[in-house]
Image (cartoon, rainbow, N blue to C red; front, top):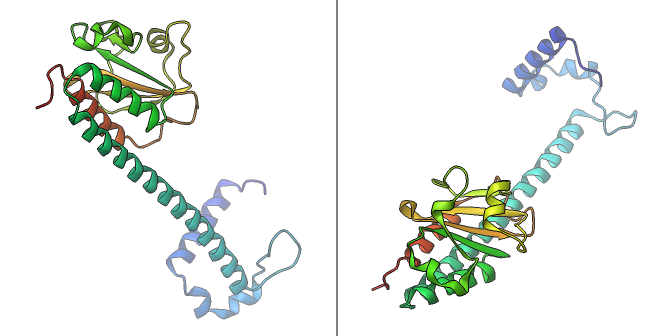
Length: 225
């Protein structure tokens, strides 16, 4: 259908707004129905107003059911992630030394949070950078390229400079990643995936924030009491 002239479009919008504000108008003025033709589908046939209304309501219900199913799916996923985060917290609390806690943290990212790769940016003096067997897992935060990662977790593709710094040859960068700042600016946790849709720009970050808090506590140099 070609676009209406501005004046006709404004008139149509006013009529539609009036009908929405007065849903019983046709019931109060049934004579108008004799002058209305309401098409049904793409064919030349016409249907009654009630049939057309039923069709519209049925289509709306289908859309609402799809939205509800999507919300339920996300709720189940978030609940599962929270359970895994809680399980990880209990595991880390039982480990007295930093080296083992760091290894368990990385293993949990891969096993429970579907990460294909993990990186940590920590201050150069942090004991985690002294574990050479973990290279290239830990990088010096002082060498971080570009603006610092602070505030809320960020999801999506990595900037070229950051990807090149964190994933030097022969390690390929992830197709998507979550950058999670640790508490009090003590570092950054990155979990990456080869799936470009795994960590997308519009995903929720509540679980990632909790994960960052947990990682920050686990990476404290002193053993947990």
